[in-house]
Image 1 (cartoon, rainbow, N blue to C red):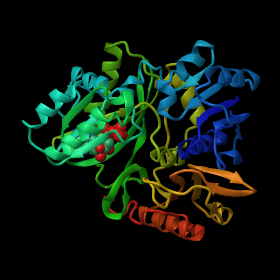
Image 2: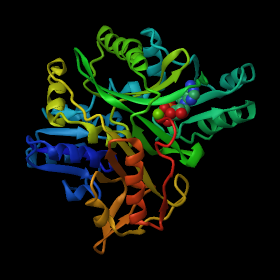
Image 3: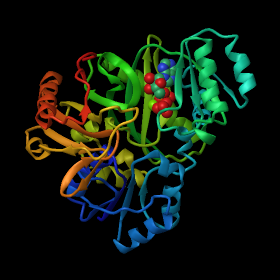
Image 4: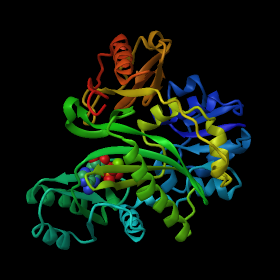
Length: 421
Ligand SMILES: Nc1ncnc2c1ncn2[C@@H]1O[C@H](COP(=O)(O)OP(=O)(O)O)[C@@H](O)[C@H]1O
Ligand SMILES: [Mg+2]
C-alpha cells in the first residue's frame, strides 16, 4: 500500500514509524512532515487548506490510504473531501468530529447517553455568563466551545478570574469564532488519564492508555502546554478502574453513537478524570493525542495498517490488538520560553548518537533542515521515547539520551513518570 500521513508533529512521526514497520507499506509520504519524518517518509509541502492539491498528490502517487493526524484538518473537512473522491481516509467525518470540535455538542451527547461528565451550563452571551458567575461557587472551568489549540480552557478560582476568562473568550475573541459559545462547568478532582480505543460502525476495541503531564515545569508548575511528556503504565490504573471505564464510558459511547446514527470510524481519545465516584469524561478527541500516541504506538504489536483497514471496513470485531506491556515514557524537549515566546532555528546536534541507543526512539515535533543542520522550528521540538521493563529504567534511559543531546536551546521536565507510578 502507498500511505500518506497528514501533519508534521511528533504524533505523525510516530504514526510514520508504525506504518513503516508494516509489511503492507510500500511507499510512505507525509505532508508537510518535518526533518525527522523525512528520514522515514517522502515529505512534501502542500498547504493543507488546498484540498484539491492534496487530492492530486494522492492520485499522482497512487495513495491507498490517507491517515490524518491533527484535528484541524478533520474540522476543515479534508477527510470528507478525500472520501468523496473515493480515497480511503483514516480520520472521522466532519460530522462525527464534532465530538471534539464542539464541546457543547460533546456535552449534550454525553448527557443524552448518561455518561458521567462534569455538570455544566452553556452561554452565548457575555452578559448572561457574567451574571451566572456571580451566583456560583468556585473553582469552575470555563471553556471556549470550538477548537482553540489546547488554550481555550481556563480553570478559575474566583469571580475576578472567571470574569477575566469570559472577557478573553467572549469580548476580546481571542479564539475567534471558537468562543462564540462557551461552557462553564464544575471543577472535578481526581487523576487524569488519556484512554484510547478504535471505534467503527459496529464495535470498538481498546488500544491503551497513558498519563500525561500538561504543565510546563517540574511538580506540575508553570503554564499549561500541549503536553510535556507521558508514561505507561500507572499503578493508579487498577483492573477495577479499567473495568469501570469499559462499562461506564466506552460501552455507552458506542451504544450512543449507534442509537444516534453517528457513524464514527477511527481512533477515539477519551480525556478522563478518575474521581472518587469513578471515571468522568472531560472531553473526547477524534484523533491520536500527542504525546500519548508516541508511547501507545511503541507498545503496539499488531500491525497498525491491518487495524486501520479493519476499522474502515467496520470489521474491528474480527481483530485482536496485541500490545507489549512494557513501560514506556516520553519526554518532550521544548524551546526555551515555550509555551510563551521562543526562538527558532537553533541547531540540534548529537541526534545521531542518541538515535542508536537501545530502547530509545526520537520523534521530531518541530524541526527542519537548514544548511545541512537539523534546527528547531517550533515550541515542542522533539521527544525521546524509551521502552524498558520498568518505568524507572525507562526514565533513566530517556534522561541519559536527553543529556547526551545536551541542547542549549531548550528544556524538558525532569519528573516525567516520577509520581503516579
Ligand atoms: N471539569 C474539569 N475539572 C477539572 N479539570 C478540568 C475540567 N475540564 C478541564 N479540565 C482541565 O483542563 C484541561 C483541558 O481541558 P479539555 O476539556 O481537555 O480541553 P482542551 O484539551 O481542548 O484544551 C484538562 O486536561 C484538565 O486538566
Ligand atoms: Mg484536552
